[in-house]
Image (cartoon, rainbow, N blue to C red; front, side):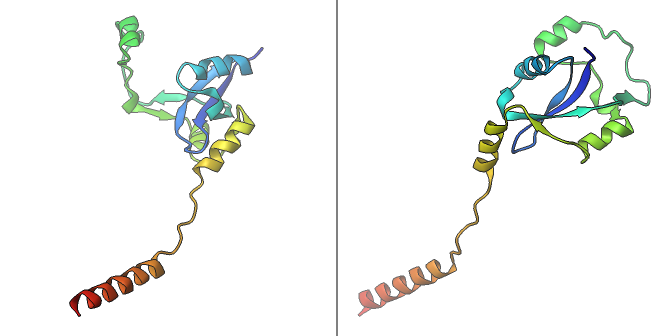
Length: 140
């Protein structure tokens, strides 16, 4: 089976989870499961494109790759990286998102919807009126 690149984000908050390359839905699920709950994510298929460095970055292979992996610290110069034009579009709008678990995605979206606040002006006015009448009574 051919390998496919995927952009993965959290449902609701839309926080970026990562870019993954997998040859099946099950492989993608396993990769995403390494860092977060799969049922809370959605993905977009990405086509030709990539991450690039337009100026010299660092020679490959980087030294100490196993230690860097174990410590969580990386020498990859991400600050100098950029996206190819086609992948840029995925990050800035042109994506069709598919939830891993549509029912869970709907629940998450519903929980995150901000409910409109009730107007508070009348209540405050009523409280001020009550306080004013209490003060009048105590001063009498």
